[in-house]
Length: 193
Image (cartoon, rainbow, N blue to C red; front, side):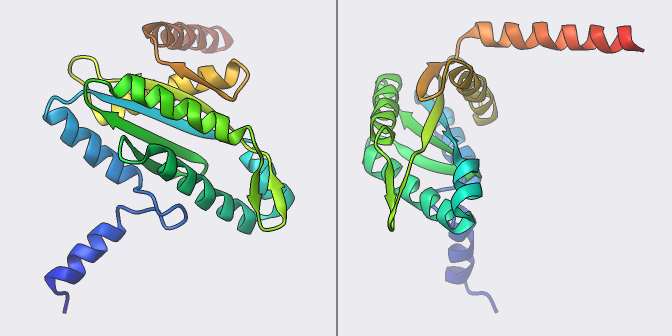
């Protein structure tokens, strides 16, 4: 029989990523929705590790898993009590800050992460070089966690196109570019048919 404590423990385990020991994607959605309902300002950063596939290919998945744990610990240290870090899966992480200074705090935290990653990560007897591309957005008017993640994702890909190891804020132009590309894609498909 499942007691109430055991059910609560299983629910908590369902919100924690086992490799990084950070809250997972589901926890991020829950947290962001809760803050938005309270009408708190929310700033969200999406972090994608640059070169992670090469780490797995060259050193093996065990070292890749160790690196995920190390990045999780680094993010926790950088965030302290000012923000919360999450692992969304694979080599994707997120950081959420709330309150009136959330955008400023979050950008500072992301720049701190990039500075830390400028130095190779020491894992056992290896020095692993890893980078990050970061997209940042903030709640403006009515919003939800999925929309904030989508905006941060567009901004993160702008960071990758811009040369990696950088932070990029979401701007509405990214949505216009996406729509232009979608229309062009539809037109090309019709032309080919």
